[in-house]
Image (cartoon, rainbow, N blue to C red; front, side, top):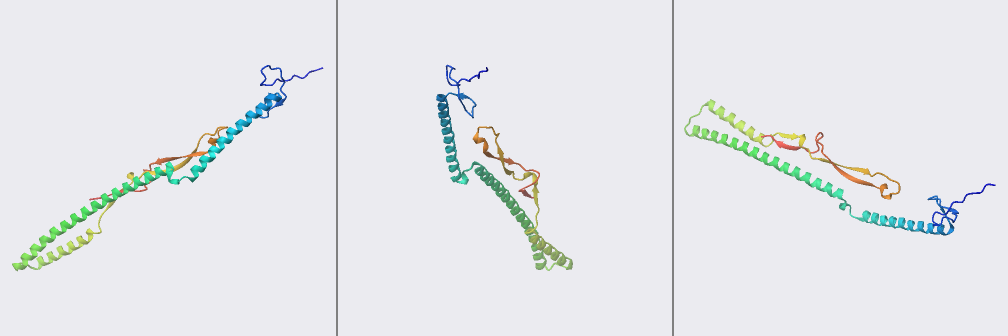
Length: 210
């Protein structure tokens, strides 16, 4: 007649006490005494899990109620925005200064030519020394100076350089490697990449051709 072989309790040091309860989690056999102890240990582990849960809940509540401006990515974006605006402002001011110099230089040239015509007219009138060709020449010179003066306020060339475009930024989401048993791995973190765009220009730094 065959007899059944009993498995001992995994906790009993003597190894003589039979295990009669099988844990559905760890698949180990326990005697009645150690079965209760094992259940108590699992209860403590559950308390640890609940503690971690409540701790994370508190952190999430704090992060949710925090001001968005405190996020490090937003601070980086703000810094990029300020630096880009400052670059544009400095470049625009440099261009304005060059325009002022060009306009003033053109006006000085026109004024110098106008003084020469004035001297010739005064001399011709005082000395009664003028003929049709002189009158025609002076009139043409005056018309040209007037035309040049009108053009000086509207004429100019702005040269753009696509290679000097401002670096673009792009906020991308990436996830950590997920491993069983790590609750934190279920959350994704964010990372900001500064992508320099040299082919497609966003802002062109421009220069005024003199």
